[in-house]
Length: 411
Image 1: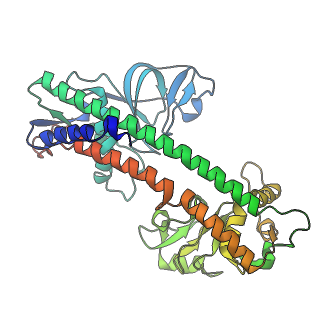
Image 2 (image 1 turned 180 degrees about the horizontal axis):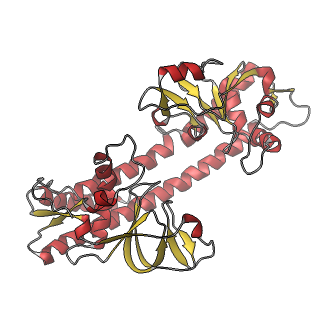
Image 3 (image 1 turned 180 degrees about the vertical axis):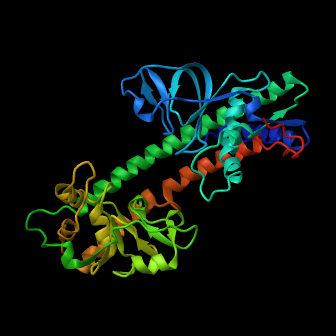
């Protein structure tokens, strides 16, 4: 991990600076609204132009393009809804969506990149702790203006800016290293995905007459979901929706919850069991996930549950193959909202292999699948750890003594 060039000495310097800050350096906490001008854009998100000359910041993770600009300056852009609290640093000509906060005209006492790192590290947590709602759906301007920013050595502006600049330098370097390593790992992950896809398709593509074929309805029971939206709860049992079906296994921690009463209503047709398959029917149609445990999930609208009578992991891998996806694509219907009918799902062609051959294929593809897709093993976990390491050292550097309530200046 670039130890020779940026190893122990780099981290020791980072930790020494953090210790100096946490060990009693004088800090004044100043409300964000006192350090800059905060405005919002005025345009709708659909005002973008794919061939535009200038950056157009919406609440999306990446800026769009547009052929006009309102600002020509150094700025911080904060998503006011959607990806709430995400911040970008930009310098030049740009436009902004009406739900994007634009920070400009910064005070002389703050380094703009230092401000960027403070906002990126802590704004979302601050906003979440200052909202009374169960879910934060947008940023209130007064809360944004009152977000506290640490200004070290406020009585010595020169020293203060020097400390801020050194923190920025270290974090810029560490950001570059983390981005470089993450890019390397992502490239490796992309290669592994291609390798998995290649071997999966090799194993699950058969010559004419090589195997006998049936349809899904002959090897599994397919249960449709209720076609209505339930009342969700703050806690309870998991409801799997189309957006939850990605990456294979379903993460129950991220699903919306329903009460036991709603759960019973939505499982009258069938109560999903561990290793059953769930398939999406509308929008992102044809995606498949594996139910992780028995009697814990019910199905949201636009999904089906597949109770397999053969090896369910074999079906899982086959549904992702180019053979199955090609069949699904040929039979999808609808206009702008593509829909996979229950009849089409039950008619998906399935190769009828013996149990031993199914198990052999599953064993091979499970190993590649784990390395490629698992959130706890392989390269995805390594990428996650690198990001966690970056955030850990960033937070150490920004670990200034916390403000007393009576000393915080609020705009």
